Structures are given as C-alpha cells and as structure tokens.
Image 1 (cartoon, rainbow, N blue to C red):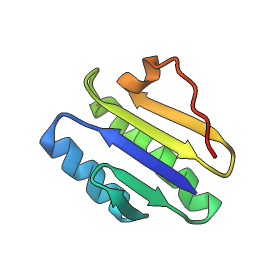
Image 2: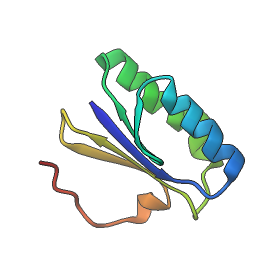
Image 3: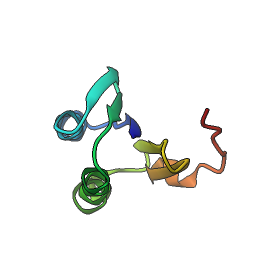
Image 4: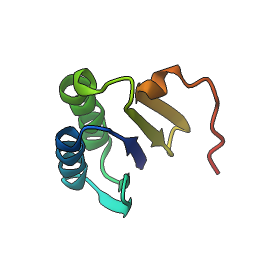
Length: 89
C-alpha cells in the first residue's frame, strides 16, 4: 500500500496529478491518496511519476510517497531536500 501526499502549486499540473492518482487509488483528503494494489501497479505508479511528472515539479512543489509495506518514503520536488525522517506506525 502507498500513501501519496502532495502540495503542487500549479493548478493544471495539480489537477493532472490528482486525476492520475484517482485511476489507481482513493482520495483520503484533498491532497492525500491511498493506493492499494499489486506490486506491478505500485511500481507503475512510481515509474509514471518519475517519467511524466517529476520534470514538471518545481522547487515550490512537494510529493511524498509512503510505502507502508516496505517502510520507505520516496520524495519528489522540494521534498527531495527534506532531511527529516518519518516514523510509520
């Protein structure tokens, strides 16, 4: 299971990103999605973000992907520079 949280400043990119996430999961809050699916689908989500969205993110944008199964966090945009660790319960 993945939890994706984002803060994207550009309305057009934010809408496109939200529609993309909606194809794979359900919205928990306005900018938080839960994606629970097969490993292949979860890998596809990561690849899609890396290949199609990462280049669109600015220093004002942050995307966090919490991989609850493997207890890992992937960051995009400004979030890459975040040094803090997360504790996932």
